[in-house]
Length: 331
Image 1 (cartoon, rainbow, N blue to C red):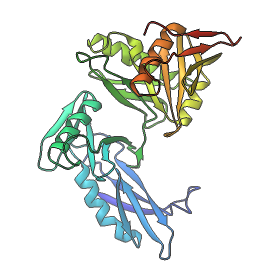
Image 2 (tube, one colour):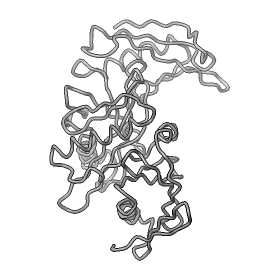
Image 3 (tube, rainbow, N blue to C red):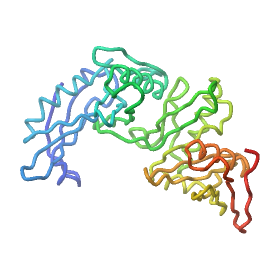
Image 4 (cartoon, helix red, strand yellow):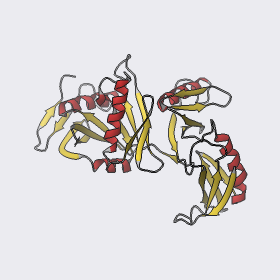
């Protein structure tokens, strides 16, 4: 492994004065071969430098102080001749667990413990979380902490938040849930997720790629016998920038779904109807799908009731452009 420090000549050089280039070609089988790790300047009474590598932070007073710790950390992160594609972060305990992609599977290791592998990142997160709760790393057994997923930028080893999630809630005891984070590819030209024994990827298409990926994953889950109704799968917790992009591909109908104090604008995406919910506490957006207005009301009401957003006896209505009200019934 070779490390080379160089001045940063980009526009952000005031806050990132250096780039630490790490050549890992002799140690990795996939990936860019050379990583460009940003070295950040931390202002204060005594200015210092720091880097973040897959979520692990290293501080130093000078660039030379960072070289050896970075080399040790990068070597320690390499597994099965690969650097992590994801990390699972325990927010309270601040523990970070690297996750690697190997063929169609993703796997997470534990220091001196078991290895968890599955075709879906969600299953690996669940199994790892159960194990860490059992051994007390995430607190007492009983879900006192949760694991949050972040993507790893292969070129810089910085972390990326998912742009949104594909999610399905279990309808009963004999049903299963599904959860998968969606990221952009390293070149920024597509979005992807791992689901149903494979990587699912769709090129950017003016915001419509979110609907295309949702449909592709729903079809794959149906073929695997894990989803009976494709509209049970929704795009969930979109980042604001992602929602702005998606909104350009939708047609605002002028109708509004009213549920208690919530008022959700209704859009059309091809044959699909979408009620858009803004989760203000997270500043994220949920796209509730439906085949038509009646179907949309029923599905949205079930989800909002599950979350306690609508009381069991309350009706949910759709107010059209002309002010007419259509009340959901039969619940």
